Length: 101
Image (cartoon, rainbow, N blue to C red):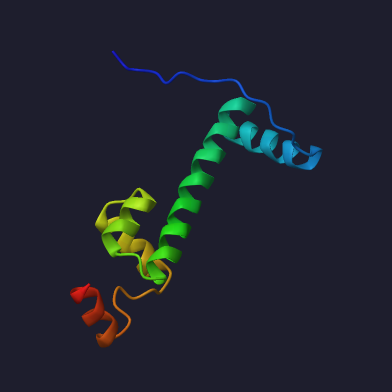
């Protein structure tokens, strides 16, 4: 038997233009407004987590910790870095410091 997640009702204030865009998206996806909002939020949060993890990696967070922060396995996080043109190791001296510490 599939386990379903408990949904919790919440309220949010949206401007009419944004609500219209959500409704158009929901219609295109053949979903109701609530489902469309959940899908959009889930995708946006996932993308923001990856962006934050990439930023932290560039600031010196370890690859492993950054991948965990992003909620990705190592291969997928490496793919995200590659998409952004971010090298895994930017210099030999940087690599030596990471190995030591």
